[in-house]
Image (cartoon, rainbow, N blue to C red; front, side, top):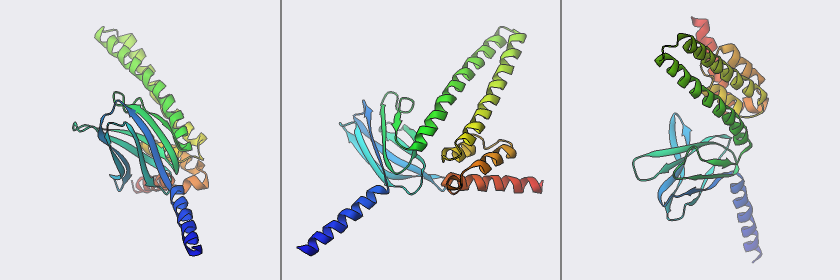
Length: 234
């Protein structure tokens, strides 16, 4: 009996340890009756499936995966109509909640989870404002060209170019101001990959030691080093 209790205790400890190393994604897709939801991440330039669940009537779901380091994960929805939709989020150990609807699966998603996701959400909120302004200026420029109003077309083009520069610089400053988050090198790699090497180097050098040793921190260092080597060879 005593041995059984010891074994049971060890089992519980082992189980708890495993849970501490897991990402648990809980959520609800309002309006979804049937379909399959996949949890995926990028590995060697391909997306690998980590877990999946089939929905048949109940739109709530739960997915699990072992996770070692914070990185971008994806929720894919297969509605059996040959169209896959996906939601991206910054994953880390613990619970992430994703609530959305079938009608507005991607853009209506509300995500609550890792601290990295909170930082990313802050950035995306500002980018949404930039994108709204960008669309307005594109429309104004188009209308000006149709009306053959050269002065207005030139003005809106300059405003559009200025907006793109502000958007670019905002991303640089955001990455530097969040040097203690894995989001910083991630943004440098995905939003600033064609930036001047001096800007990329500035972001890279600003990262705190834990972030420099993270997945995206290592990738940014390798990317910056590669560009420097290529520039020397030119």
